[in-house]
Length: 443
Image (tube, rainbow, N blue to C red):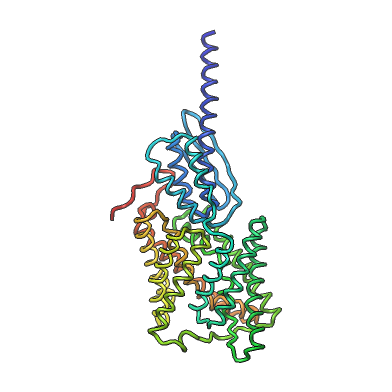
């Protein structure tokens, strides 16, 4: 009887321990799913889950993170449990990432599962910082600022503003309804480019001498470029987090391809040919006036894109200031004949270093500060030229333009990665994020 009683007690304790572990693991998995859905990198997701796992009492934790799925295993009291979650939300919410990062950073000791759940619910309450109208206008101003940096005239800025504002309104409306992302990007790319080209064509009837710069259509659809996941995938590749990097990169390429296809259809249907930039800024404005205006355009573009990533106002301000400080010298150096990819790589390195410095003094993550400042360095004119050349069966010319775009994007990723390794030992030293996070470096 005593042996049977002991056996029953052991079975009862084992079941109770498994139930406790399941309870603990689910709150850890909830944190990971929230971070993944907000666009955080796989390293951030793994490290945050591991820290919370130890805080709620799990002895050992291991996780596998892809772009849309998390496999989480916890070990405690001689037993283990594995939970799997799928996260189909693939948006970007920098504010939520920052709030969750602050929650994880505050975990100095033990915390109950109930308190962890409560704090996660509190972080999740206010998902969007900006209203629909503000979000739409942010898209319009950001793309208009990018248009000026690519030598658009005031007329082109107006066309871009209208097209990007309407396009963002439609995109947001469709995403809320759960429409497939590739379809949304394709439709909104076609809509915004058609509005831009149609606006210029109608305007030419009343102003026959107005410059017809159709290359500015890239600025009108720039809000569709998945800059956040694209740059995140490059950083994940450098960290060798390939299970997340490869699908995130393919996702980004798929969205860019969808936009490219829609541009090709619109350009073909509206019988639009690529034209040279009117070089409005370079030929019309003096250097003492040009540089400040480029600074203003860089500030507006970076601030607007940060708003699209749902970064809070102060983080937007930090990203805009970083973008302004770096982008004006970058444009000047390229115009002076310096190698484009080298200049972009150095500029991205400086952006990463400045973002790390600002992040260390504030509550905002460096990704919220660096990505909006880096997105405005994408060579939009070359991208449009490549689409136009492909449309005209000029494969060689298209390959040249696409090579310029590809190496420019790679230079951005390399610069940000080098800055990350210089300022974060967790990136410099190859180690598992399931291990305790190294304290903030002092060097």
